[in-house]
Length: 459
Image (cartoon, rainbow, N blue to C red):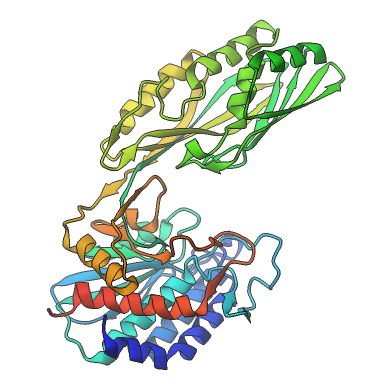
């Protein structure tokens, strides 16, 4: 920790808060309807980027706008470069806000607004941390570059463009996750399947592939007695079944427990329960083939055992999740799989095993793809110094984390995620009433200064 940088941040805390407020007041949701040259993600994102670069320029930094895709804030000297990767785009505001999502209002020591935690707050904490280092007069051994992306939430086109026009930093961290530090992320695999045929069954489950569906809605062309008998035969179950008679059959709502796809073991997948139930019903031959096949290959496992893809390494164990199912009179229109696999896993092997398994239920692949994971050794300079910064600042003895989720860090080489969600603190990103505590924002800026000194300044 540096007394000098801490004092500078404390003396400029009001300026930091006001700068973040102004940024939050710019709605930077991707808007393709206003996209144009220099504003590839719409006018809001472009305005937010230019405003932030202008503020950095007023702090004495060299800045660069990379065609509206992203921006750079540069400082220092040295042959190598330290990157700090943040983003200015935000998800749509949604409903249920107590305070306006783009007003930058402060209540009870918290700044409310979309992006305060994800990721405008961290971006400005990094900017003011760098400004504190600049004001301290410390000499650098590595150049420092803050990279501000504008499309993290919708497809990462910002970093694809960056890779085309700029050289990647030698080492980087992204304050777009959680403390203490994420040094390992799994391979993220996504695929979808279909089976076209005349079906008497209808199923609707899930809204996004990266979440365990907590409910499933089913129509089956059988009597209520048949459904009730099937439910009774299941015995004790963590799922709830609500049955109602309709013309030509029954509707069933199956309720489980929603969870993130990276931790499916914490959820109860309502679609899998629906398949288990339907497999006990007297369905027509083609529907029976689909249901029984899915029951065999999916079961209730969440590690890919039935597909023969279960594996683990230092990054963790493989997990599987059926996230979205759309099934109507034309058959199974879409069934999605979200797999978080160890970094040593083979994406092509997963593709082949899934295709082989779903073939048993008559399904064929629509599409597939994956994002490679990463692992940075705890003994590396990047990880050891950042975890040291965290432990010293917060008086902890924390260790790096391996997660199944994906962060912005995976899109740069030799990068990790460092902050800014705190362990045990309520999470508000992507939710109504997203907010950041002002004392945390100021402390985060100090952490960012500590990290820059540890990784970029002369020893």
